[in-house]
Length: 109
Image 1 (cartoon, rainbow, N blue to C red):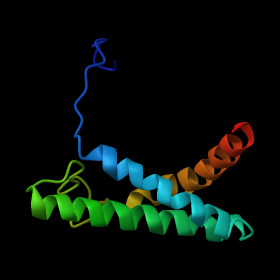
Image 2 (image 1 turned 180 degrees about the vertical axis):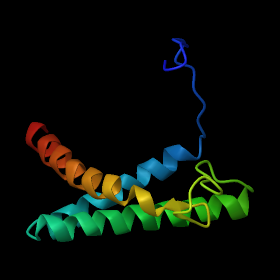
Image 3 (image 1 turned 180 degrees about the horizontal axis):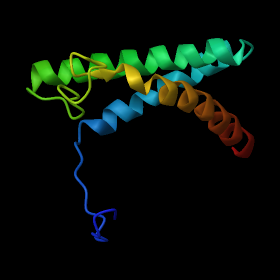
Image 4 (image 1 turned 60 degrees about the vertical axis):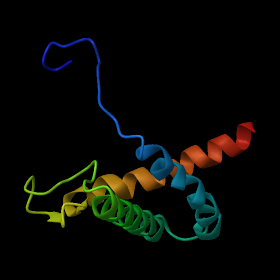
């Protein structure tokens, strides 16, 4: 859209479906850490997201030869092209936002 292309065409990897599906494993963690301070919970989510991103990206790079989110050469804050340290604030906040989404979904079930 920013380039004037309103077709909204995109590219995706089928590998992302099971990777995003791993999010279901985070629900019991949310219940376990619910009483912790928001700062500690944010760091838990940040660490878990980085761990999953590094593990799944590294596994794909080794098994299929490429990682869908290869950050190599794009920033000095990349770790082996698999995670970006400068994304820390975004992952921190996103984890806390997903807690709210989780609680809201539990209310409407």
